[in-house]
Image (cartoon, rainbow, N blue to C red):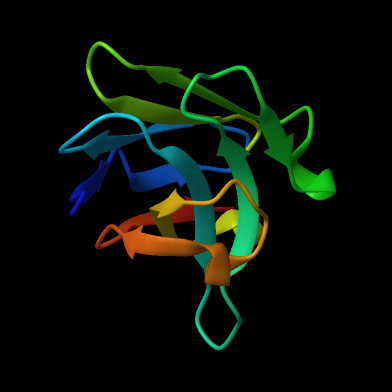
Amino acid sequence: QVQLVESGGGLVQAGGSLRLSCAASISGYNIGWFRQAPGKEREFLACISWTGIMTKFKDSVKGRFAISRDNAKNTVYLQMNNLQSEDTAVYYCAAGQLSDSPAAYRHWGQGTQVTVSS
C-alpha cells in the first residue's frame, strides 16, 4: 500500500507562490491534488498520470497552477502562483485512478496547510 506525504505548505502573501510536494513510498501511481477549506467540500485541483504524460486541471486554476513529477524521487509537485485568499485550505495529494473525483483515489496523504494573507 502506497504512503503519501505532502510538504511545502505555509503562510504566503497574496500574489505569492508556493510549491507543494507529494512524496510517495512506491512508484507507479497516478496522483491527484485536492484541497479543502473549512466548511467546504474537497475540491479537485489537478492530476497527473504515473508516466507524467497526461495531466488535467480544474478550470479555475489553469494558468496559475502547474503539476509535474520526478519519478526518480517518487515525488509529484504542485506549483501554485499568484495565490489569493480564496486559495487558503488544506491541500491533499492522493493516489489512484486518473480522475477529478475524490472517490477515484484510494490512498491519501495527511494534508498540508496553505494560508494566504491579504
